Image 1: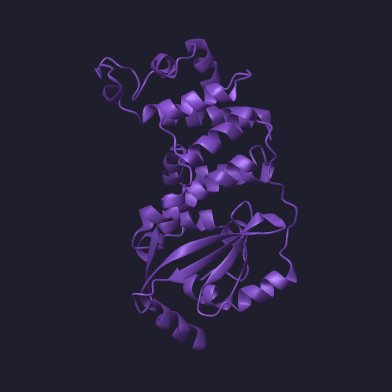
Image 2: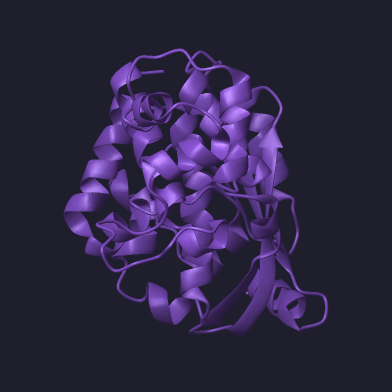
Length: 277
């Protein structure tokens, strides 16, 4: 894990978690004389019963050794979710094993499985969120290009740069939040990777919306697994369901994404008809 990038990620994460808290919830006066939103660093230290210098250096990304006890206290004060707490520990400890891109292409057996998933659009993402394989139904529903530049094959790039995305996804903001929060976990596992850094810079250059959303440092949690996806498809009409995210044994850099139709709607029937055409 690249040390400089890890520390930058750590300090931005702690700052955003601290700034989202209301001082009044902790008994501090929330006055207009505060220069920044949320709790101050010294207030976090006071509540965690640790030294102000210790917390300040931690949030500044300094090269210090912190105990798990200190990180536990900081997590409690910042009211981190379990997923956010794991995210903090990985960034602060810095020596947890990173996910390595052990393969560039999925095994042929995975591709065969993908094509035999019936009326469920499914595709495989690599650690940069490039769509490296998809079944026929995915191509028809989501119009993923069969060829094109690397950026055009990237899920994040399409999410922030395809003009019709906000009309295609009825709950675009919820879907975008879920995707970006999941990507944050992938990024943390590969902090400092040159290809990831290039992708993020390209997204920043192309989209002010990405710049604003990325700066929030939101981390994927279990509640997002139930995020509904509502699609206004130009040919198939309204499609409702959820994305199921699956890890692939032996391929830690890949994620299998399956669009599971909502059984209370006619989405499955529409997808089945689309597959027949």
